[in-house]
Length: 111
Image 1 (cartoon, helix red, strand yellow):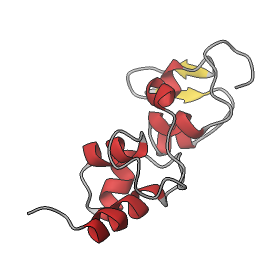
Image 2: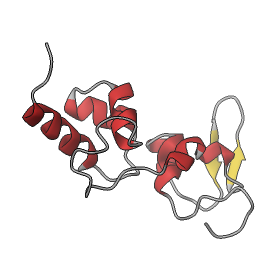
Image 3: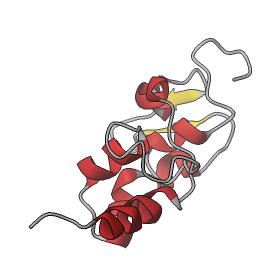
């Protein structure tokens, strides 16, 4: 069954009301919306004309993961790794936390 315009607006608002650092998985858990739909809404692939004033993720940030940052220190098999800046969210919230982090850098320069 197709969603009404109001249901679409409600879903878009539910997804985009979370901070950009919140993972798709966490938003899915909280809202019941499928992670792929959340990704498409957050990157403006779908419904980019619905509530356009709400912030969306920059499509270039899609590959920003903590383990791609110069501040990431790979770990052993028991521990996957850690942020050398001491940011615990990288581990507790998942590697996509880097998307909203001002500390993310692939060159070692300030982002």
